[in-house]
Length: 311
Image (cartoon, rainbow, N blue to C red):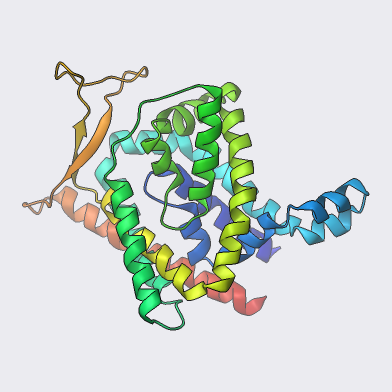
């Protein structure tokens, strides 16, 4: 029971991460020690699994795909997304600097804890780190697209976002921002349970997960150190997205007017980052929240080590 509660808690953390732009559920899976098993379990949905299911061998099917593991993790993910979407909507609107500060600390610490799992640093591993950092940084400065609610586009959003959600350092929510559909999918549709939007996204996400898990599992097994270094680079390169002190830059039309979404919100095209020049109470609280984020990752790391030693 303790094992499944631990997996459920990690699923909650993954779900929370997937709601947050700039934070990856895959990062949480990697730092809590379930990343490789998660990918292998998702990959197990193949013809063998289908034959076991259709032949009525339910116990063998459950064992083959690690069903207990998947249920524990994904029930946590689902509950977290459904419950936290509304909370994060409020926090991002009311206390943006504080919540970004906490997330910045989380991800900053994860760079160290993931990077230290590389067994041997050599030239190919260093190059992987540099490539991952450069790629994630280039993605972070792209301008978001416009919102699109067509079924096909939502399906494509689901595929791309799901792949990035399990890829550490590349945030599925941030990818949805770049695709223009973060507010529509992660906030409005989840809060309103709009199935016309959610169903094509979920179908695309399932297909994307099943397909991408095979590629990621093979790469992770054949080139483990290089893959971890690449993923560490992804996380490092995306740190700018999480920097708490930034001013939004709004997208303008041809007449120089700020573009407005259907929801009434202004369309953000990027951010101007800055460092506070005055030590106010708000800045002190933000820094303390960064430290709290770092300490949270430290506790997750220790928890993962304890569970691994007991299992």
